Image 1 (cartoon, rainbow, N blue to C red):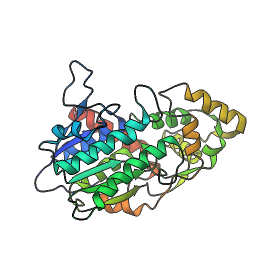
Image 2: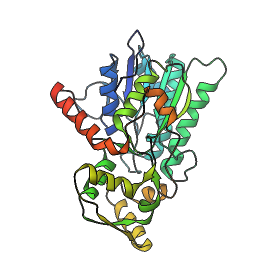
Image 3: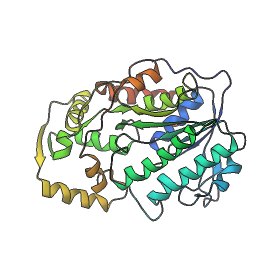
Amino acid sequence: MTTPSTPTAPMQVLLTGATGFIGRAIAAALRGAGHTVHTGHSPRRHHGTGVPMDFARDTDAATWLPRLQGIDAVVNAVGVLRHTAARPIDAVHHHTPVALFEACQQAGVRHVVQISALGVQTGTTRYARTKRAADEHLLGLAAAPSSPLRGVVLRPSVVFGQGGASTALFMRLARLPLLVLPGPVLTARIQPLAVQDLADAVVALLGSHSHQRGVVPCAGPEALTMAALIASLRAQRGHPPAHALRLPTPLTHLSARLGDWVPISPWGSETLAMLATDNVADAAPLQALLGHPATHYSQLVERARATTEAQAHTGAPS
């Protein structure tokens, strides 16, 4: 696949959330395109490298201004599934990104890319409300008269790739010959995309599409239910079709509440609520950014495998 073109002059890019699943892919793509990527570390760590930053506490624009000296672009890939004392969702998704975006405008940073999610524009969960608030603030700054800030909000559907929590869950389910799935998993439609495609879209926004502003939905070429995706992943692994049964509604809600007690689990009450509506969008905007169709869901396992092998061969971090 063709890598999106880059500007003639590589950029100095501040990437937040660089240690996360999506952030790692973005960092690799940006470096592969010739950009210099500055990543962060918690100031509470004694031996951290990079830019000190704490999304749980850095809610003042003045805190961010010194960190933006010499920075051409900022990509915010920080996100949490649920609220915890260590990572309060209102600060991590809303107040700190707003401070960062305000500082970008004050410091003259021209390019800001915010990684959000499909569905937050109408969602009522805490996840959706906090993400939407930061999205709207960035878009408001970029829309101000004579503003030099080019703000773009990327809203992906379910992102698939090595190291993703939801990917690991889907792959575990794909190994089972008998599936008992919550009702929304059997009926809710998604348009999964490879994490590498999302990362390439970020590269394009700092290159061939650096003029772009606004919201860009990021969806794979075709919609399907989550149950159908699990079936496809099973087929991609060479397994015969599995039998799928619907989990009764009371047990579905009980399983979600139990998931709330496991902070690292992608399943919980918020996830169940987000599954109440389809997570789909027009595939054309992402294709326009990439210059080719995004990876089809039937090729997700092979794309993830090929990327992992390429990174192992080159010694690049996964």
